[in-house]
Amino acid sequence: MEIPKFHETFIPILKILSNGETIYHREMSKKIINQFYSDLTKEQLEKKTKSGDTLILNRIAWGKSYLKKGGFIEFPKRGMVKITQKGINSVNKSLTLKDVENSSSFLNFYTEEKPSKETTPHKIENASPQDLIDEGFLQIETEVKEELLDKLKSIDPFYFEKIILILLKKMGYGDFIETSKTGDGGIDGIINEDKLGLDKIYIQAKRYGENKVREKDIRNFIGAMSGDTQKGVFVTTSTFDDKAVKKASDAHHTIVLIDGNKLSDLMHEYNVGIQIKSVYEVKELDIDFFENE
Image (cartoon, rainbow, N blue to C red):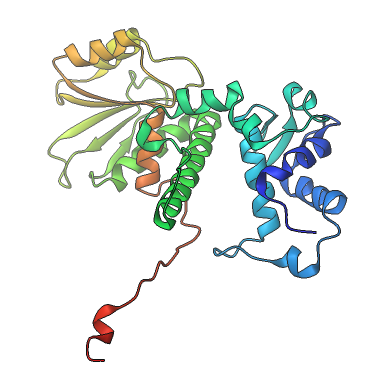
């Protein structure tokens, strides 16, 4: 028996979850191996990826990720998995990689959450090894950013405000001040544009799920900015509607708008809320070494 490809774990995952219970990912993986891959040898079960992960667990994790994007399963809580009605309807079918990638939920993920062509994984025909490496890194990056944004949408709103201040600090701005959680007039924090605090930037952070930031939110933010600053940053985990964007653009203040996708990009770039899991080395022949042959 060979170690399954990640798309070959689709049906085993759905069958383990078919009773509708919410279980931990680790428990699910253990049940999948015991029920469907018990014939694998010890060496196969212990085989590692280049980054040191257990290969079979890595394949199951990617299978779970694709099924989630396709709407077949959901993650109701951190580290937990549950089947959806769409998944239940697919348990006894032959679910291929093409079926999942062509499902409406999967396509919506890449058109709504990550519309940029530069950040959307796609199939490469006649790809070179370097192309495949780059494509693989892009797909992992997209996955991490999706998980990051989902997490931001579920955390405590006050902690979300602090995360934004931490991000701006890590981006090179000066010290920040958290404002009082009551009576702050719509200002969630004040950050120094420079190390000496000569110029201040006011921060508004809105942790929204699906609701868009409206014009009145920008208007209230402008009204809350005192006379000692003309600069503000409005951050949200969702998006801004057209009127909100126009209001910010027409304001006498300089207001930078950061939506959910831009926020996850910045947090990924500056390693806020994520950690480096693996570092890969790609080696090539050293021609200079052989010049004195």
